[in-house]
Length: 150
Image 1 (cartoon, one colour):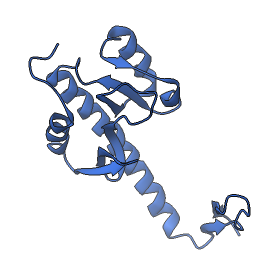
Image 2: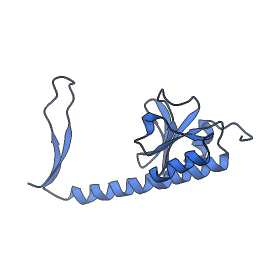
Image 3: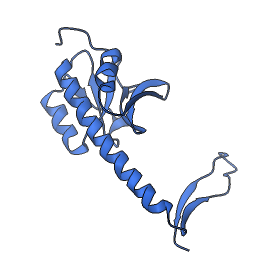
Image 4: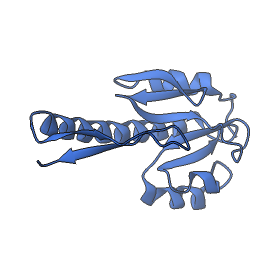
């Protein structure tokens, strides 16, 4: 058990020390993002335990993390298809949290850079654009699709 209680304030302090991290909200919950990509947030889905943090992780390492320390890391069916692990803040050590947020920052930074490169490559092309489908009369929503080619 950690010697001092860890809450989102501690998460915020560690996260905001990383380059280009900003505090924001997602689904009404405080979160940390780098270049618009989520790295961590308080888990608000009803399947998560109270005082849990959702943190971006490598999907290949997530199962190993949970197997190595199931008291700290866990997953619910809602999060299975997302690159996140749930963390019990009452069980994680401050150093482990710092390492975990650093890894999440790296993963989100790489994703943001790849996304930005793709946007730059596509922006100069005249044969690329967004198509909007007609409004769905049942839901009232529209769908966007990327058009490539003529």
